[in-house]
Length: 354
Image 1 (cartoon, helix red, strand yellow):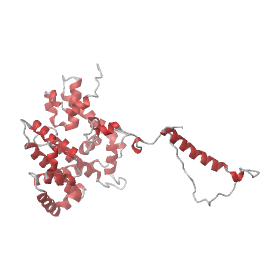
Image 2 (cartoon, helix red, strand yellow; image 1 turned 135 degrees about the horizontal axis):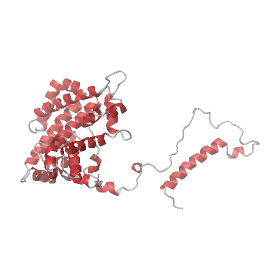
Image 3 (tube, helix red, strand yellow; image 1 turned 90 degrees about the horizontal axis):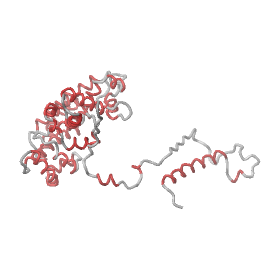
Image 4 (cartoon, helix red, strand yellow; image 1 turned 135 degrees about the vertical axis):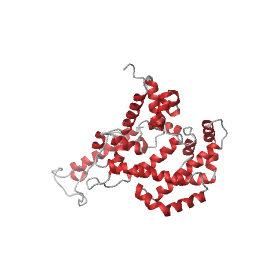
């Protein structure tokens, strides 16, 4: 008789319970002849366990642990993350500033005494990133990049580690990340196009040629990047200096540095871990929502006369690309709209009259 997976798991769980009950009740054939089948008797093997905890949770296992077909996942394989995955993301200095600005958050995550130590890391990490960025004014060959990394490691690794709490691999990855930006920008500028947006579109379409470049391929391998990562990079927000991507990379390193902050006091052994919990918490304060709230407040403060839809569009844009362009978006709301904003606004519903 056919049975469903859920019924099978239910029967299996119940079966274990029945076996446990039969054992506890002493039901077996050998006991049938005894006058008192429920009387205590010696077990088959000498007992060693003090106690047993058996849990049976109703319902099937996670779909991630099964071989069920996942057509939607297959359809989206290799594509960039949907915009909805970034609607409430807070990393690096953004997350720290959000926590520090809200007394409820700092108290909830027991970070009151640690904010100063965490804040002290920010300018040190950004200074190290800017210093290394200045060492690579243009893309180097892989051989010359390795020479530059080795020379800086010998001269500045100790200071780098002291300032940031990061290790030698992070030092190399910072070089390689900046090198990849230079490589991508050179490739974009070499494309045919009337403006930077057209050049980026052409570069994204030619991503296979970009990845096939020897120095680029070696660098991507060292950074564990995929071709889809490179394409997303090439198609980034049109700008000659890649400010959005550059800031995202800095914030990534800053996040790692903040997580590395250790004891500030005997009763605060790991503020970096506490901040990580605050950034990834799914049950307490939602930092991402706090960031969106703060962004929306900034739009409201300077956006008199805008429609609700325009305010929502600008909020989504500065959440995605940073507040640096806020003044321009407020002056000309249409310039805030990009593919990310369109994807977010597909889920927006006008709340109606206030």
